[in-house]
Image 1 (cartoon, rainbow, N blue to C red):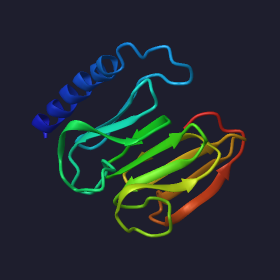
Image 2: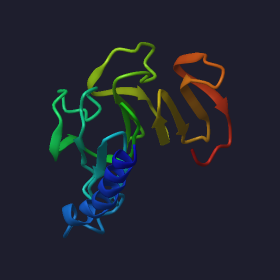
Image 3: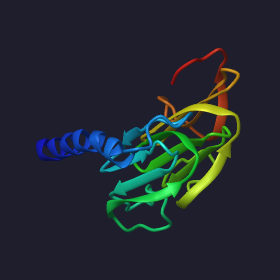
Image 4: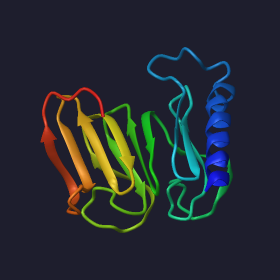
Length: 170
């Protein structure tokens, strides 16, 4: 367990430096800044040009590259991305038009638990997202908080349900 934690910590620290190297000469483009999210043994990074790149463990297709092959080098998954959240076996990203995309294995918010090897549209008008361990949360531009996945009582919401209004962060 300690070894796994040390490896994950080292990867996250190293990966935090990669977007800067990947974005050299591109910093300053309006609307984009390098962002990174570390999931369970994999990572996702948004370059300053809005392209989303993933790498690492891919046993559940959480990299979104239409495979289950582990990747030791970043692979391009989406364009025009403004936000990404890497969970355990699920990844979610928001494109500049407010579309929320999910992929991987588990509760993707689509009403089924079918593995998705590539990004699939889930919602429109989304400004923030977070996924982790069979759960997801998204905020729309009008401040609505939508949730999907397992709750603390064990009930599973297979599609997003509205929970709150006037939410600013998730």
